[in-house]
Length: 40
Image (cartoon, rainbow, N blue to C red; front, side, top):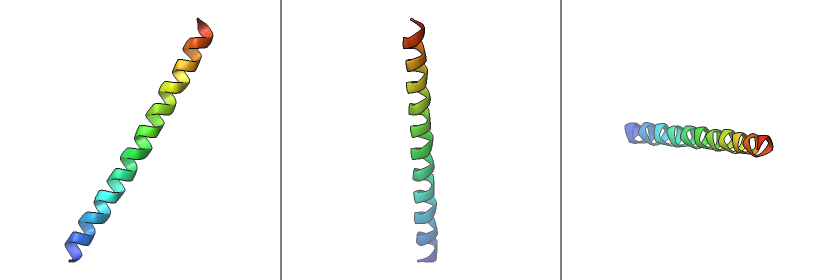
């Protein structure tokens, strides 16, 4: 039981990290796109 709980918490932590990373990437891409639109 203890190990399963540990595994679950690790999985949750990893998924939230991936979510944050993805949202940051999207923001960077969006920001670059806005800059690109302004230049041209």
